[in-house]
Length: 307
Length: 260
Ligand SMILES: [Zn+2]
Image (cartoon, rainbow over all chains, first blue to last red):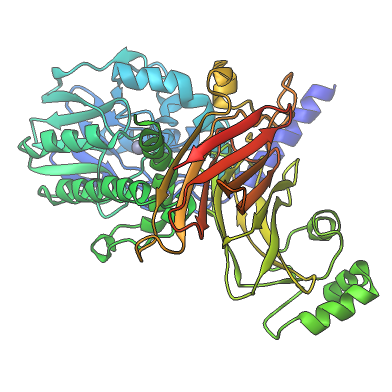
């Protein structure tokens, strides 16, 4: 007798808590057969429900391809509905660009459909998905209700693969994380960069290798494209967003090196001023300080432990 | 206003009178951080002595910690005259007291890192010659786990290979090194809190920077929340003279190093 009562209570609680927590996802067509679901350029918050990353989808004629799935089960469900309604095609394939939680915790809504990610991404997810998920529960509360990490099922490998009428070329980079997948749709010239490129939004660095990231950006700037879909921020028609991301990363690396070699403490480094040329980046100060905490200890260790 | 009265009563009538005399117009006794633990901190960390919240005690921390085992903190005290000592504590940590800094011949400023278990105020309280504590602080948010998780080298089982090793760098002052110079040093130590399961408390409890004659420049009493393999950043009036670091941990292991 007790179990049904509990179930009723849970259902009631969910209705109350969830009443105003709907992701109002909108798809913007950015090329033939291609749509962007743009996330906020803010940090995770109760106001945005973690909807801070870009997702995209392609109607290939042979089924819809989805690139990244958002921060939660509920987001993933809303995304799948939007994709199928917009394209009139069933989802046949999902790509996760990398292992950060704002890009893949919606996978659950695509269970049963092949989900592709780079082998390094799958390894990182296996290690960190639970911690990421716990942290988002802490930051987003009931927005995360029912979310359980659902990991990719297939290795994405560099090279070409055709779905319907779209020839997709996959590139394996690293730098933002241990595995950063880039997809070029040759049918439209659209380059999906994941978080290797941020557009007017400060890059995030919790798993970054800045040198590898900058050489990945060098690789991307040599790839011809008609438009670029960044992991965060607006679609870009040219290479400016790549150059700006590279500029910021180069400055950041130099800033940390200078701070350590001139004897700054980590806390002092948090509060050093940031050049005005980065003012156009959203969440600049917050991300800069997070980056100091990510990167300073490694540079400091190398400095103090060098022979 | 009511809160001011109750705090004043707690600290005792004589203490209140002294505080009022010593308190400049800028001082306040309303906790700017709104901590539920302030009364308790005042009793246990400052022995209930007169205090004021004072903007001249500046505590620099991130608003949110990325690594709860390694939260960067710096404090700086300016314009208060001679400071006898500075006590650093975290209101909502399972172990509150972080360290006590004695600036014998140094700027009243220190950089270090702490472990925190949850969101907490981190405070620095500087004691002036008139017996009044001047308190600054800031809130730090954290995902948690910093105090009850074993440290990295403890988890890796490698701490004993490096125990007590000291590394340092000195940066002479901009004026050529005659007065204040920056000293950064690291002492390898697991700094176990005793809160991680099966690992007893084991931490550095004292460090002192002196010259070769034993004249002290700065000394530190350390407690469990100081991070593993801690770094310290000091500004000392050593003018490029040879310095020495000495200290010990809870088990009596000595730390000795020349800081050339
Ligand atoms: Zn990312």
